[in-house]
Image (cartoon, rainbow, N blue to C red; front, side, top):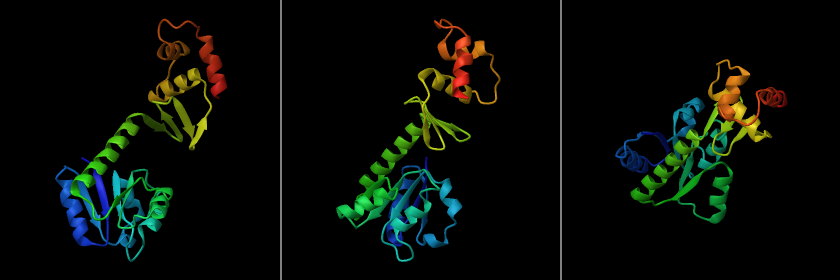
Length: 197
């Protein structure tokens, strides 16, 4: 189950979206006027469906306003299907585009695909303070900037981050990173940690 926010000025479309996605087991919140919706509330959703043409604030402007707050997928719903509109929406932080009128099957399939991708990414990444670790690519980012670790340095940092708050001897770190039968010695750990710091 995912928490989904649908924003559209047409109540009929909101009702269709709510009904279609709740049948898939999702919890769907609908709003027709996003100007009355507190910014911090956007943080609780796993995916946002956003109409582009609304009277109070257009979807592009709203996306620009909330994109830095949320890291969930934002899917635009719109009758504006010109290439420049699609490019504009994606460049402002949108993740996908569904053209109106849309089919229920397509809506469900696109939502499911984005939620699957988000789930995979969350399994492959974690953060400790301002450092984000990508387990799949073996990369670490500090304040969104790639840290140029060697393979061993990354492995040490990942090990310590996964076991955040625990104290390890250099022997224990060596064992966790290189295994019991590693072909180096524990002084290598000390040197790697000096380089990291």
